[in-house]
Image (cartoon, rainbow over all chains, first blue to last red; front, side):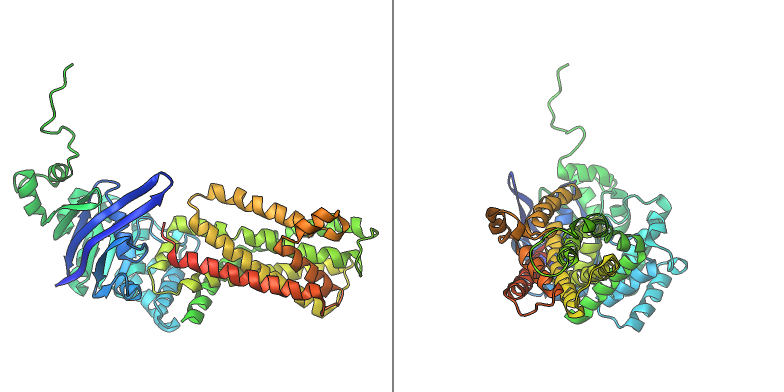
Length: 260
Length: 249
């Protein structure tokens, strides 16, 4: 069954130079327990869509439900059901890991004692135990990302939104993070909605891909179905498939020969 | 829930203030310098009004402390926006009003603490004022801080770049200070300046605190000062809450 569904979800920003349609009308469904890869070139509207689905930004058109809660009429319900890790993360570098985790628990209305326990649990699950009393500024990139995810998992959300979770991580940390995402789905049935620019990541991790361009969905399906349909073969690289879908090929097939 | 959330946010930011003890004391430096190097110039000047020159100057310096300190409170939120902390909190069920109130109450605490330090220094310099009047002065500092910090946070939430924030706030704070008669009573000046200064809300606050410092509590100044201070605080918190509720970009 669908845990996220959107219909014509749109966002127009008013700017000094006139309105900008960041998202023109997104229709998509995400099934429960699915890892969905949300792809698209820079400026395609990925982050704007994520910020709408997590209640950070009010849509200017369309509708959506997340875990049975309507985005427009029950934002509080949506907030209780989802966790969100922004590209920039979201911890204060001057505060200790423990204080951030406990405060996050308290923000989700856990009692003081329960929040302290939950911080320990999360630290254990995400390999942060030895780091609890360090300042966030003292963590490595991979540790910081695990902390960001721990913060988002505080209330055991049904849906986890990750915005470019592995950007800037070394290959080892990326592999660890992929394992973590798979484990979350396998052990807790968490639905994961992630954006990425790394096509190997989408290929390795996502059950299904949704490709957006210019603020609308331009393709969706399993990685192999998309390769077959747009890349011409199941063995096509996701890179070529992606370029074929978004028309941003380095050497377009239909380009006229250039006279020198 | 509002109370729980406000207490939580208040605690988080109060701990932040306590971690930077230097900044906590540094805030009181500017009014302290005025007290030390400007205050003695006034002792033998006719300032109109009752009481000593200290009873005129110290109320002004208290409000100056609030005016300059609280107006810049928004800087902190610009930095936090950069770290993603504000958005991280806004996806939790935390009350949006608490995100503002917790911060604003922390600011009020910090500035009242600094105001106490300033008054203690003034006592050493020669200030003599009734205790009730001094306490009323602290209440006005707290209200002014709440108002200005709320507006500062609202502006900072709307602003994209920190570069624009400082000059914008300074451009508002400087004329506010000069036109409210924080340093010297406006009644000393020409009529046009006195009239102009009545357009500044802070003018009413400083007049009220000067009355309080000479033990005159049931005056028109006190009434107007209290009305303006409370009204301004309500307006500012309303504006701030609205911005915190809807803030998108």
